[in-house]
Image (tube, rainbow, N blue to C red; front, side, top):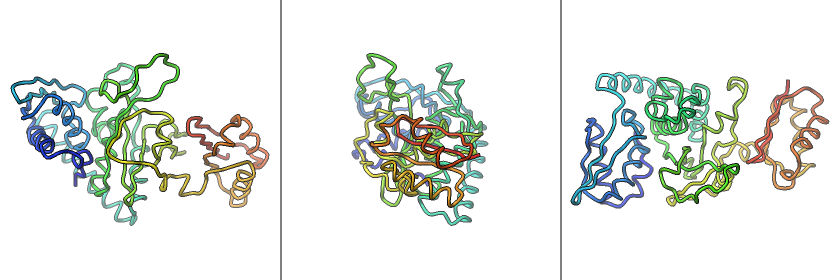
Length: 335
């Protein structure tokens, strides 16, 4: 079941162009012809490729637009031939059936299904750093084959794979693109949402009528010990958290709440030192092996080593830890 995100917000004439592009991509038309303006075509084609992960064979990094009299031609590059497409579709059908069977077997609700998608991709995917180093993001690393066939992908492929799995479960989601904030680069051009400025992708997910963001790529980077120590720093977050590390334009929805984030659900947002001491005593009493919490402003101002010292006085055992400075998250794993 394909649950389209961008399509919902389009005008009727834009939806007609969207449908026309889909029909021609379905048969691997090398040159797609649509009625409308060049500006509209440049807007709609990325929406199609983000809404429809099943077009894994269309290279989403190489498209050429040619404007005519009231029409536009889009020259596409396809990375798979007909036999390869059939074989991969069969493989995807199997993956989709197994995924749904597991969801039903575990009786997962919407939120648990989203977490299952997050964990499944994180555990079964390596980040394709070599592609980023070469500045070559074409092909499988940027589509669902990167995750489901090669198990190596960059952020775009990871986000599309998450949407594809969520589509199977009928959970509304979308792929959002933007730019990672890099303070070390002086004089960065003002972000206005151009495709050429985007260097990161993640998901927006609807859980029980609440829209929140999920960045599996960032959690992949934060996870430890060959992914047995899974991070949820960027799982079901709101606009405020995302604004700490990315710039993006999303005029369609608001993500103001973090109702289903890991830290809200587990009540591990720590407001002060006494709150932290109570949390640590609770963890020790219940023999918790992981101390995973987010701190509010008063503690966020402290040096990370001061929090480590406070933890070490309570834990009294060896531990490893990490600190997410952007989101003020501490993650201690007891030995």
